[in-house]
Image (cartoon, rainbow, N blue to C red):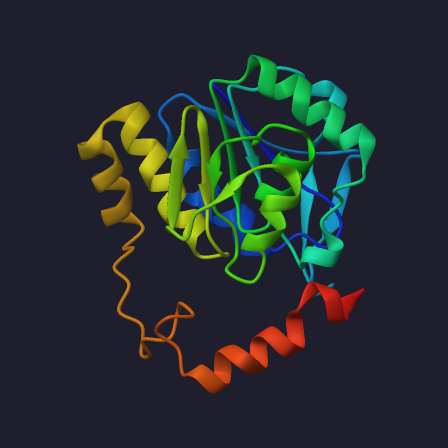
Length: 212
């Protein structure tokens, strides 16, 4: 089984690394980082890079596609070579997945029309532009499409899919060995839990409309 994690300029690191550390532990699977060109690809901070070892054309038929997100204005929803690859890869894949705003890329490729999907809470409305049905759940499964909410939810997505493929006990073993036992110091990880003024501040600061 081959897992292809897509990289593009200004992706968010944990969106890619979370599934890599969970789903990438699938027995016998080969995980490859792919991009339009091989070499380092910078994250949204510009301070970290992951290395794409293969080009998109070198990985035409992965079994699992993982699309990380990034700042909404940086997600390449008009990159036709990437969108064409996503369509072709999806035609052969067993599972097509995304983390955070990566679902906007899947939707822009025409893969989520009429389907339920999630994204970062600030970008859920963006899914409607492409005919997808936004859902506020942390992980959403609709057929072979598995989408995760913002950033850290990629870990949950990876474990969810790992359980579907390799069984619950194997997924639990991976969760145990990665010691994924969230006990955050604050209960502010979702807009309905965070202080209202903080939610408003984040909306004002990171609204796609303001960033264009």
